Length: 380
Ligand SMILES: C[S@@+](CC[C@H](N)C(=O)[O-])C[C@H]1O[C@@H](n2cnc3c(N)ncnc32)[C@H](O)[C@@H]1O
Image 1 (cartoon, rainbow, N blue to C red):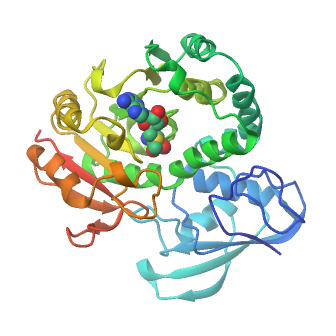
Image 2 (spheres, rainbow, N blue to C red):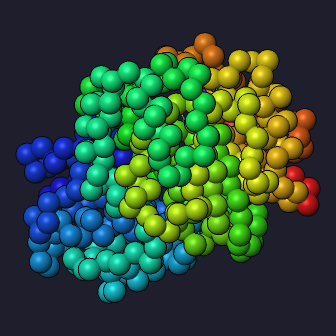
């Protein structure tokens, strides 16, 4: 039996001894009799989870079984993977294992037999499983070259719109394969929960509107935005991304080549967010996963004011920052606590809070010591 238990195992290598491996290891075809996905790993009703199920199913022997955790009998607004969706993807009625509750509260595993799963739209996970390891190798090779070469390479990427060269030497690719892989896995690990939670906030707020624009500041390679744009149910038509590190452009080159549907809809600026000017007013502006802490304290409020001013009326601003905690040894000193984050956002309107990994609405108290999306809606 193979248990896929964690989204952040640090290697892309095939499962060691046939038992454990990273989620991002493409499982060898037709190998396992049975694969169990731990219920500790949250699956959503999105292309990323569908792609994972497709890959795992391919790793099963003919007639092999996959045990998939689900939440709720039918798809719901919160967007967790439901029993009905698993059965639809696998084209069969599954066998319930350890299920409790009913209706929206039904939880447990469903056992399905190997099937040819066809996700209705693509996820970056497909590309990452195929090319993540090669990309890690490329990054290591680049780290040995002068910083200016990375900048030149970034400037040639078809989706890159701006390249500022200040600080170029400071933001170089990781120098070892382990570091390069860990940084890619960190970025892809972020997509697993940031994208579906943001997608559900977008669906709730815009109620089916299409033609939406998204701006992500401190985006890294911009994979959260790209994944949002690949999902037609979000209504995100274009995503503009900005990061100071030229390596962000390199991290997205293979990805962009793989998804022609992002042509003209995915852009990246290699620039400082303090100086940014949005090309077109976005409907959604995001700061995700530890970005405000990297700009000097005095520039944080002006930066948020610029972001707010660029936002189209009727849109929203979302900030996901980890609150200060000894768990984050490296950034502890510069991190913000919940009250400091609230104080930065309150000038713009009422601050709403949603759990980072589930999207559940949180009270002020509940969000004081945990990471949350903070959201402010701009009047229409
Ligand atoms: C912790 S990472 C978060 C990346 C991405 N938002 C995510 O959620 O995965 C912080 C990012 O902020 C970028 N960054 C730091 N200072 C910046 C600045 N002044 N302007 C733009 N980006 C910056 C870094 O290069 C890095 O990619």
